[in-house]
Image 1 (cartoon, one colour):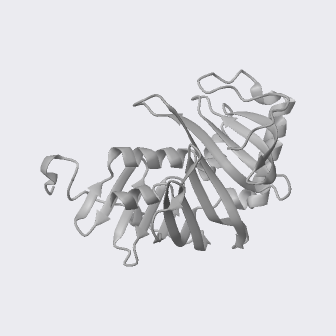
Image 2 (tube, rainbow, N blue to C red):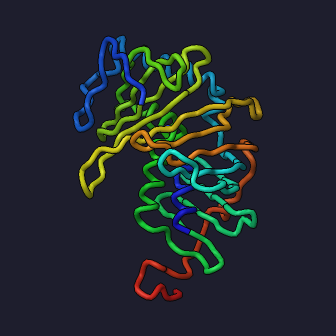
Length: 276
C-alpha cells in the first residue's frame, strides 16, 4: 500500500538559466520593498499573463473542479517500476482531492485541507504524516495554487530570469518569490506561451539538505476549450519519480463535498492499530 501512496502523492515539475537584468534572490532572503515596480518584474508579470491567457484566461482561473482518468507509473533508478496503475482523480479547488486506484477502485485517498485519509477494505485510516506532508508540499507549489494564490498576492515578488531552454523548447523563465521566502520557477514556451516546466526547492528538516522538485508538461490537447497537458512527469533531484498519462479530463463537473469527507475507523500508526 505504501508503494501506491508514493506513486500517487504527486497527483493533483534542471535547465540552466540565462539570467538577464535582475536575478531572483536566494531562498531565505526577503523581497525588497516595491520590487514589482521595476521593468524586470513588470516583464515577468506580462509573461505570466500571456501564459494564463494561453491556458484559457479568466475562464481558466475560474475552474472549480477537475476530473481526471489515466494511468500512473512510478520510477526507480530512471526506469518504470512495474506496469503502472489506473487512477481516477476528482479535484475540487482549492484544497479537496479524491484519488481512486486499482481496476476495482477499491483503494481511495482523500485530501481535504491539511487532512489526508486512506480508505481500503480495512476501513479508513489517517494518512501517514510524512506522506501527507509530501502531498501538501506538492499542492502548495502546484501550478493551480501558484497562479490562483501566489500571483494575486501583492507581497509576492516576480522576477524575469531571461531566456532559457527547457525540455528542448525555447522558453522564458520566471520566478515567483513569496513573503515567506518560498519560490517557484516556471519555464514558459516562447512560441505558444504554455508552461513547459515548473520547479521549486525545499530543505529536508532531518538533514537540512536541499531538494529540487520539478514537473514537466507535454502532449497538450484541448479539453472543453482548455489546453490541457496529458503527460505529466515529476522528478526529484534530477531523477524521474512519477509519470502520468491522462486519457480523460473534464472540467467543472458537479462534485458533492461528501466525496471529500472521511471518518477514521482505525489508526495503523498507533500502537496496536485498534479500531476507534
